[in-house]
Image 1 (cartoon, rainbow, N blue to C red):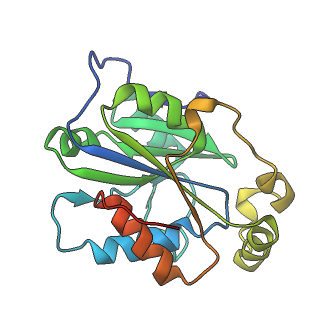
Image 2: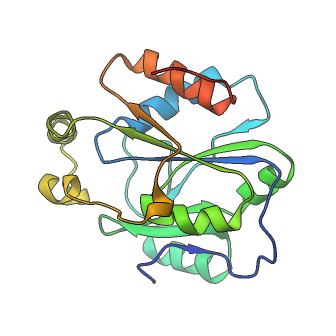
Length: 198
């Protein structure tokens, strides 16, 4: 299995016209919390889709992921079932090819992904918006320590990860230090294409 992020190679043209909103940010930033609140706020809109990630580790209570074994992941990869896949913290992650159908139908798709896939995804889809959710380092470290999930590696290593690719720069940044409800409202406005001021 490759370490590099991959988008299926057969695509002849970028996929759209829907919007693909990529949620990125360091571990402990609160991405899953804001995604959960935004999903609840958008539940009555069938044109807003929050696909489940496929992942090779057990999901936590705050995540809505589809857990699969490494063998099942490899088999699905061989059958070309993933629109994009990557590795992080020693685990394999992917988004189902079903997102392509949603985007072709003009829907907005919101997905939590690795920053390493941004450049590749920007070239494969017509309308990509990158939302970075972050927090100060001391806040991240405290949240990760409270989480206590050793399978993701040492906290120091996770906090030191950086992506230097200019094409991975976010379009919008949410510094998640106030109430989750406040930042979720900001996030929902971004999803719906509304302006908001920090």
